[in-house]
Length: 240
Image 1 (cartoon, helix red, strand yellow):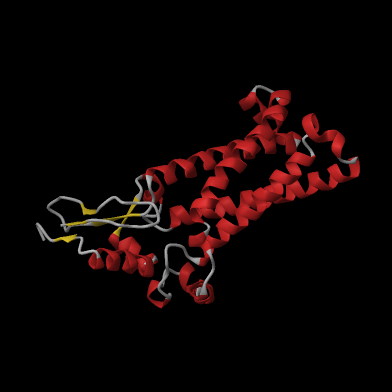
Image 2 (image 1 turned 180 degrees about the vertical axis):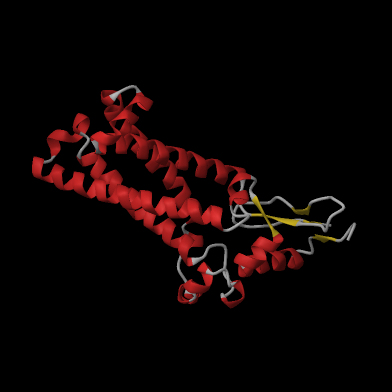
């Protein structure tokens, strides 16, 4: 069976079933190749910023500067990583902000956070493409990257050191450091959730999730996809 896709949010690939003697598994397109590349570029840049930032944050981690050619090189390249991250994340923001607007389903999901942690999915409301936790990560990182970008410019002495006072730079450095620590903590939770919820990682690696995963975790989104296929008469029942 092949179900042709007309998904508006950037993916026109077909829903398809794996061919095997075992029960057929339907795969649902979740992210396009461009979206996945954008995500991984952002993730790599964030990792480089984390390593180079921690190397300058405490002498206990100064050895990390060896990854970037030494202390001076690390200090010079760290801000450029930040600029690149801001640009890459901006593309992610443009692509996904509408899908991350909070709604009443997020309120209900948040009320059942205990059921989320204990995997009692039968008690959870039907959700669209993202749940409240995922939206929290999105908007949290949006705010924190914005803070780090602005404060990073203030403390970038090579180009902007003469534009602000020493006191302003000190406050900017404090805000920059706090935002970085919180952003790293959020990413750690984000990574853990991606591993903890089985089948999630496949979305950003292969671009698809199983129909079972979609139905269990984002049922409203799955129904919208299935409904769209039916309305467009795009269900091909050959082989079913």
